[in-house]
Length: 280
Length: 345
Image (spheres, rainbow over the protein chains, first blue to last red):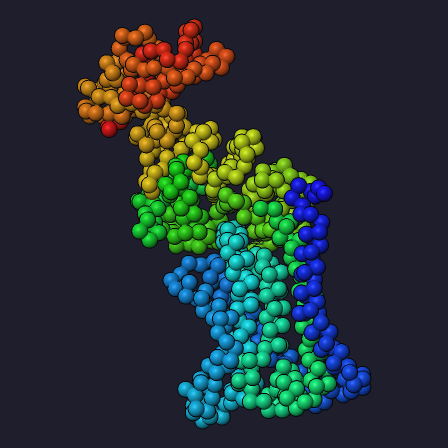
């Protein structure tokens, strides 16, 4: 049997590889995801609806969205600033900064959470000072936001740094020599050039911000209706052997992730077109 | 507008890119900065544009000191080697950019900007391509868009960094003529950087030859070609054969042949003599001159290019207008220099 193309592999090999890949994905990804929805709906649609509309579930959903709504925009700004500085300027300790950006990816989320407890908890470094001012960070929304920002910081910066480095400084220099102000240059040249990469980074950042468990679990205190995000709420339901409700809420979280995933795929498709059309 | 650089020095860490450079481009002049890579020519161009700042020395444009002014206040058009077109904007938006981003007070009305863009598209001979994106253009077209974009803001000075560097040979030559024509029409003082001596000599009013952050020579192309100021310049212009010689009483002695020195006068002593391939005559063995053995002979019509080898093994390239018959590899010849440029060795 001759392959159809000079670089082509025999047909049986192609099919074997595709089958292995698909079987693995079905077993490890599609099946568990389907199980979440099936288990969630096991006791019927009414029970499902009830589980995701309990005050605790709604409060958890609201809290999750609130934390993401604060953490993601802040990370966009900080991520843009950091990648701009790293990609477009030379300064001392640049490699140290690059390594620091990766830190949240390399330390365990539990450790990330503990850092904040050590800093802002009652027995922590700033604990006494904060208590005197009547400011609560740990076991409250600020702590959740801080931990989430820490965990999700690398997504935007990691996405933008290689992109900006590849694009270089020349377009910005051209804009400046044409008389544009720094702000004009940023809005009309720098930002449009990275917009798809930025959106992609924001989506990943958002997905993680909503789904983060470890770090958030440490700083949350698990106060029902007050400091429980969706992932924490799911854990509580599960530990109470309330499987149907746990899966119902889990399906809600999985649904949010799926929406993000679809958006991401759309962007990737769009982004690839732009990259391919650039022609050098 | 005239431009002056006075005693400009620029270091990057331990590397001295510019070492006390002074030069002037006169009003309406087309100046070439010529030199090998690392000679500091691009750094000088970027300093003139305000994209880099000198460690010491000053820059003035039109008689006004601009040393401290940032790029956006200098009204200097800059054409980048890789063009640096805004990739997400159409050709028309690229060209109009400099006018569009002006503060409201000085910004021309939209219709005026459109008119100016159309005019420039006409000038760079791309009238139909205003709606395209840079990625959809050829290298030569991008180059012209970059030029139109720089001209749109009516700069006082035009700077071009290796304007033909990224183009293939054919396009390069066409664009060279065209750029000169545009310069002559606009009358804009222009400075361009190149490492290609042919380009510099062909295009510029005056050529600035640079090496290691210093200026070796500033002269008209003819003077640079005829009277290179230093061995470096003579060597860099290319093609010349370098042989060892002696300077004796104002003349140059090459293997017994005495010739006047075409280069600036030098003291007596050992010299590096440069002889271009067409500056030799052939003689029979035994005559005064450089004894060589013919290695290869390439006839092109009436001319012949000879590759010869001296006794010490160095190669001398010779072109002869009317080659004698029967030249075959292995033949012993004597090369008699007719013209020489010699510098202290």
